[in-house]
Length: 415
Image (cartoon, rainbow, N blue to C red; front, side):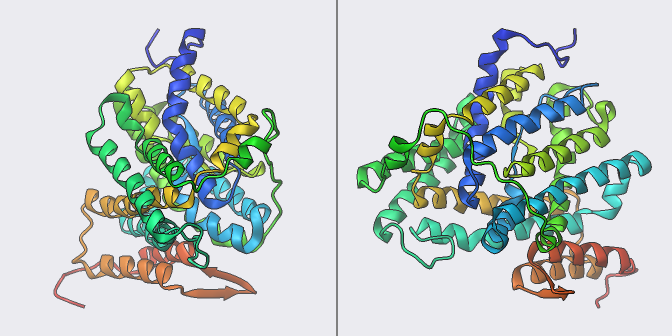
């Protein structure tokens, strides 16, 4: 039997729990930042990974699906504007876009996505996701609410906590060894949390009052066309990133998952897992590079290990006191992590342009990148029949449109 074949064994349960531990910090960070329930995110991560495995049962990649960072900005805006239920309808639509793209790949081949969504479009869209969120990170690092309107923790205490969380995350990322290097976010949270305990700013009432067993706060979606139109284009960037994730796990395991089960099936699984998660009020799912890193280190290629990780995630989702404990994490701790996280997202966008050798001296490319950044970050809004269209989604649509209609540059002698 090949090491990448599915082989369900009890002894792999400990490895599966370890992989969940690797993913845990990032998994719960997204719902904490966006106002969703971390226990729901645990449940939908486990359920989504199991659905992904069922869809790709022909040859299951050893990957774990959980909360996507790419959707943090639209979820924050959506929850504030339309509530959780309305926002979920937009996220369901985002998952269905993955499904549409998966069928387009079946019909046209994977090169179709690269022609429709080249790096010159995807790169700046990813950049705007991080840049738009940067003020939220700064406000929280200073002890304020995300919009900066209310001070939750005195500045002097908040800045010490946030910088300690940030420094720890940086040092673990750069100097950590083995499996420990895969836990920078969790390590930063722990250090910031300990310092917060020292300052006495943490209340454990939520833990004391929470039962050991509790149903996660599931939320049923409500149809909201404004949320759908706003969020749908944002799914373009993570859908394209999915290709890179599958390439990464293929390199690690020395097996080409782009051929079997094929990108059309992995993207289908990712999309349906995202839509399923949103049906319960959870954040969209994406393949986790942290877990892929753990697979690299441990050489544990058996995809059944991810089944175990999924089972543990679902079980933990019903531990009420875990949700209570996560609710005690102070704002500056999260802010310190976000300072790095959102910067990294923007850097990934720049890296996309660099990796594909996008020529920014080409006026055509310069125009596309410039318009995406300005329309998305500058606050441009279009109104279509009473439905406002702005932000990252507008930037993505503008980029796609310009890439399709602008003529190729014949020379670079100027505009």
